[in-house]
Length: 444
Image 1 (cartoon, rainbow, N blue to C red):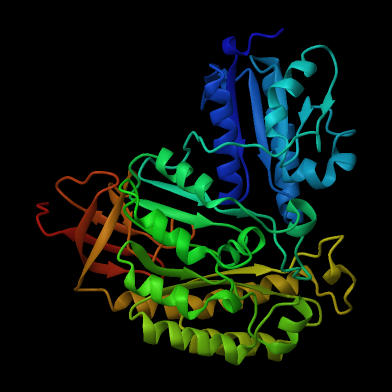
Image 2: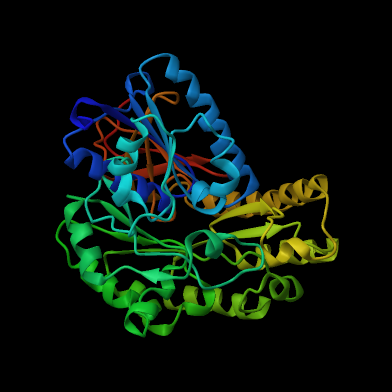
């Protein structure tokens, strides 16, 4: 048998924050075996690449990463393990040609990790996709800064949007049991900000308990002494009900922030996307949220360049943005993915048209964001310190209206600031994305 306690393991996690949680759980399995974990690829003897396959660009990045990492086999690197969405969906296409990788595991095969890896040391490449039982446990090795963490409350999706591969990769929506999630949250230690993620967090519990349980698990998570605040990402508009709105409003530990991926505003395109809701329903929801929860920050994402989308519909989306007044937005060019319903739609648009429309939408949102940020100049914001930005030679953090990695930051000067602690920052300047300021006791 191979003594893996004498081996050093490295991890490259690609894609979304949900994938990151899977990576952290696999790292915990490795750590609990007594093996060594390294963040230096030069010292890794076994390298795991957890892949994304949501879009063609994601698959390209995954394949390029595998090929780039193969060069380390001329040094200490002995084995490359490819896990996650790419092998789960495309194992028959990739396993024969990506001979640089020694082991392939799908999204539910982490319990077979060491079995598959040991087999590879006896002279053969190993395809274990579909061999596991899905057991992952609740322990994790955090790869985020110590003061915040993600909690993945479900996997898969039932929404069947016509452009999306997630149901074909991750399967049907599957909520994780409440007791398991509470145990996992407790194991994270002191957390300034716990970020709930899933393909659709608002659907949580329906498959497992027969009804929505998001409010209940929010109440239980915010009752934990080690969890100081909770942020919600990826809330589908049709699932945001009065009970959830009231919980966000009244629970002091829930950050007044929602990420609601709308994907478009125009009714014809929404129907083609198989998205629930309409332009007017979305505007009504935004109005209701702001009426019930003053100063709530709302983020969204949109796809442009969808098949047959007209210039008038893009203009309609621009008008919607001006009416909606989102705090933050992401815009993506439609990616034509095989094995999706939208792949066969007529009116596919060129890459140049899609790129120009993305730029047009970002330009509109930049104006909105800049005006919103100007309103903070001269005031004071409560800011969570994320650390030091050495390029700007100052501290960097986030206000309540910014999630990690996807939204803007607050850069500030202070005599002393500690990562994971909150500070009152006097805002003195802004651009279209970030804020700048200093704490009241700062002396230049």
